[in-house]
Length: 568
Image 1 (tube, rainbow, N blue to C red):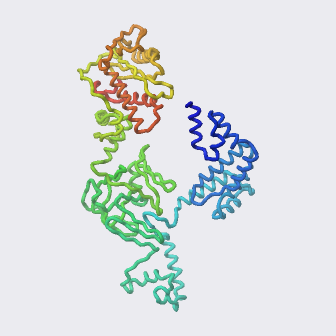
Image 2: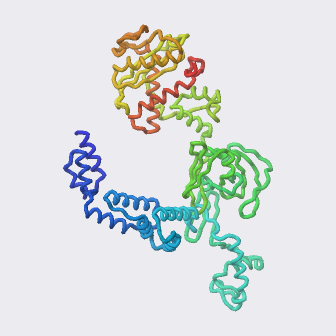
Image 3: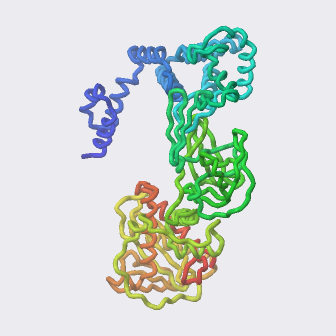
């Protein structure tokens, strides 16, 4: 099967059944595409009429995204423009207003009255529509199913309501409530009358304020708001509170460190106070929660936005979503339900803490460096907030670093001068070509500094060309001359090396050129690990190889007494 037939088959996968039949016999990509264009992109009257009907009948559906609606409208306008049909900007603005439902009637009248000289532009309507959507999302719904139910009316509104009712009490003097069959009030004002007379009778046990019912157990909090019932487990739920000045929880078992003492009182939103009995650290899996207050009367776990801001974290609230970042790292995410932002963050167990997460992160950032190299960098304070790294088993390292039984070890030797000996080897062809059509790569390692260079090759006969580039580079940078080059007995190294002595190893003895052989293995392992984690196409192996080379050259080496090869 040719490449053209494969591409044609791939295009047909995304075609509807009614489109497939006219193009089923096409075997070339160009003729297939021209056939589709002739059917659906030609400037015939039928296609123009179809697009005109589409833009006139386009309607926005309640509950869907306005951005998608605008993109659909703009797509139809672009198609009509390519067919030579162009509308005035005012007509396009009116068509957009016409596509809005009847519930937007007030908005339509406002926009038409606001337009200068009565001319409505498309850009003006787009901006107004998007602003209205953003305001609607920011305000939220009045009553939704969610985690918390908050009061729908403020204190000022409540006081005004009570005042207006008290003024009109006399009109209900001889009226009888159909709910409790008593006078001086009607069914509408029953709950307010009941609250006012609670102190006089002292035996009323029920409370119904703003139609919110709450039942609290040991592990669940159940809230009822009109028709919605919410069951919340307060073990993993943490409220992102912009008004809280401290992180607070009532669960003692969450703390990893605990300090008992008198830490004052905590004022709550209902004007009540509760005593802070302890202060400690709670280790969450979102890598935060230091300095948490323990207050028994707090029903929910609260995360203070103020404390996160002081800790160097960035809070992002947008379109009903919450994201917590520190630098380029996303620490936690949450969402808005019932006008409050909340997140699920389990308490870290089995010894997992922020230090382990930092070690794992640096392990992956440094192209899956080993634990010894990570600890060496940490001791030199080169990795922020990491002092002692203890890595867990990495599945990507286990998959990418499988090896055969190693050769017998020999006492390490090292030349005392730069470029006195250079090790070189060409890696066998890879199965996938890179973006530069390369299948091989050649490695050069200086025996003194242990610094190495990698060049990708299309064919093996490019080795001498790359060696000349490498020789010119290192000799000018170090002001020294290369003396020896050690390689295997491969034919690619036959040629003129301009007075440089060659040391060739016997056939089938790769361990005699073990330094560069091990480096090639390390490079391939690191590339596999990065592919396994990032899930990149294998065509990126050339770029990944160069990235790994630069990272390794900047890492300490045991043979150099933990010095960095790039600085020698």
